Each structure stands twice: as C-alpha cells, then as structure tokens.
Image (spheres, rainbow, N blue to C red):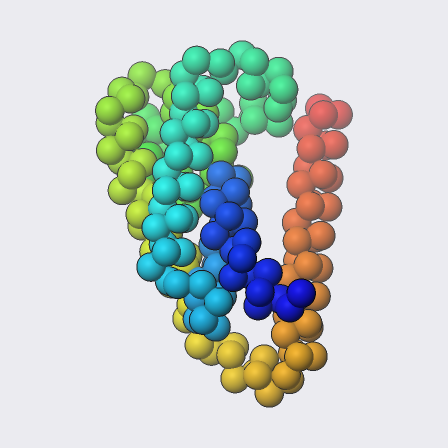
Length: 189
C-alpha cells in the first residue's frame, strides 16, 4: 500500500492519538500532508483541536482526582511540579492557554494545574482557547513547510518522499532515545 493511501486512510486517527501526547510533530506532519492533498487542512485543525483539548482535560482530571497515583506511576513528573506551580502563581491564565507550547510540560502541566486551585470551568475555557491556537499554529506551520519543501521533495520523486520518511523516522528515534535517557536519569535520582 502506498504512503498516500495509508495517510488518507489512517491520518486523522493517527493525528487524534498523537495529539493526546506531545503531538506537535504529528500535527505539523498532518499539516504537511494537508498541503500534499492527502488530508484536508480544516479537518486537521478540527481533529487536532479536539484531541488536544480532550487530552489536556484528561490530564487535568488525572491531576485533580488521582495525583498521588500519577506520580507513583510517572516519577519523572515530580521535578516539573515546582516549575509549573511557579508559572501558575504568576501568570495563571497565560499558563493555562500556553502550557501546550512549553517543551516538556505538555502532559505534566495540565496534571499540575489539576492539582492546583484553578477551577474546572476556568481550565475548560482557557484550555479550549489554547487547543485552538495550538492546532492552527502547528498545522499551519506544517502546511507552510510543505509549501517550501514540496518542490524539493517533488524533484526527488519517490526517492525524495522516502528520504523524508527516513528523516522523520530518524527524528522519532532520536526523540525516543532522549526521553528514555531522561527517564533513566530521573529514576536514578
């Protein structure tokens, strides 16, 4: 099965799943796929907005109801608590809107916010706004990247597309190795 067919068939599902995690890369790739005509940009924004919003609502709820369990299961979140709490004290509304843009705090942030005194209604409202901004900016960035990179990839034909896939795969492997390395260091502390 061709890459195009896989993206067309499973692209929105992969995007939805990816937005529950630190999904900037998945979202930018979906924006790129929209530029290539494999996905529709409006649906990319809508799916990412919904996934980002629902994911952060889930993490907020986990922080509000199950924080001790979460910290037992993911001890590396502990060092991020003070950082988020400090930001939250100083810039509450901005932090709630922008937490998904802060590297390393995409999941930890909503959990810590859930542990705070921020009301559920305030979080829902600001999270909805933040998810919308995030989905538009990252999918738009991927779309614009496609506009700039498209001629280069097309010049390479099928080799150019496979080279892009290989580079993205290598990038994903590097990210996974870095995360595993951070986890092992935090487990040793």
